[in-house]
Amino acid sequence: MASSEFWLIVGLGNPGSKYRGTRHNMGFAVANELAERWSVNFSNHKGLADLGKGTMSLGGQSRKFFLAKPLTFMNNSGQAVASISEYYHIRPDHIVVAHDDMDLVFGRIKLKKGGSAGGHNGIKSIDRCLHTPEYYRVRMGVGHSNRGGDAHENSINWVLGGFNAAQKKEMPTFLADGADAVEAIMFEGLQKAQDKYNAR
Image (cartoon, rainbow, N blue to C red):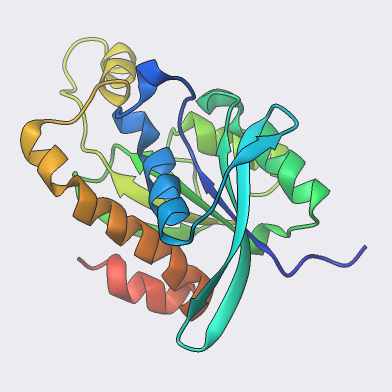
């Protein structure tokens, strides 16, 4: 079966109202920004993800895409990504994953393809289920918890916590930048997109 011309954009997070607005749901927030921008309606894909599709048009070019928010909880995100990519024949080099990143300060965005999961359980799950890390990643900085005491416990509490008032004020701009970064990868390629975002 020939590979699809579609791109798959995945925003990582945890489903359910109790996780809405938490640091770990930055990927969902970017997906929602893109859904609003491109008038995407979500429906259920095999109980594994909210999935929608659309066509982006920028600068005389267009890209067909699927937009997904896994319903599997973060640690099993790969099940949803693998299911969608297999079902629609989407290659890893046409997959873009947006996710929170504690190693970047709030407001920073870094783009990469492949490489380490950086301790992110959602990315580890996708690497495992796709059998490759060679997909694109839009890393949305959420800053780091204080590293005192039990670092693992601190990290869990941190990513499941919310943003402060100043950050909430900046959030619309940050999410718009995240959505722009996804589009830049798809329309301009990784190198140009990295030049634009990684040095900020």
